[in-house]
Amino acid sequence: MKKSNNNVQADLTRSMTIDNQLGMHARAAARIVRLAEKAKGQVFIEKDGISVDAGSVLDILTLNCPMGCTVTVRAAMAEDKDVVESIERLIKNKFGEPE
Image (cartoon, rainbow, N blue to C red; front, side, top):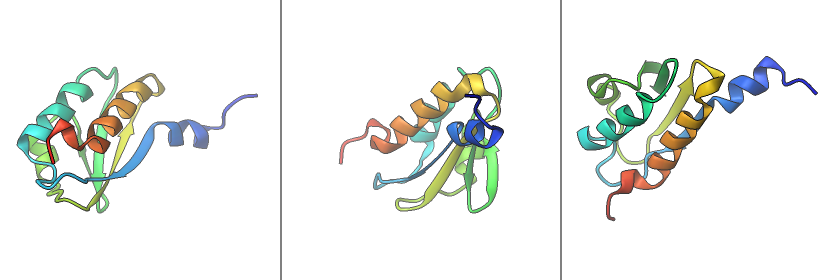
């Protein structure tokens, strides 16, 4: 059975809550950028309807993502599903930072 375009787009989009105390700060944003750079196409992070390039630390920081906010990570190409999943794991693991 063939996937519809809606299912493909859902596979490339993940929403998650920022759970670490410092929110998404420069070091955390740099870790996201390293993962996003592995993508074949563009990867975006969105908060409150504003979408930015996940390959830019400065762009990510302009979103102002404190602890408790929700962000959405989205890839433009189906081949980058693994990049989206890697960013999702990083955020869910609080960027690998201690409590």
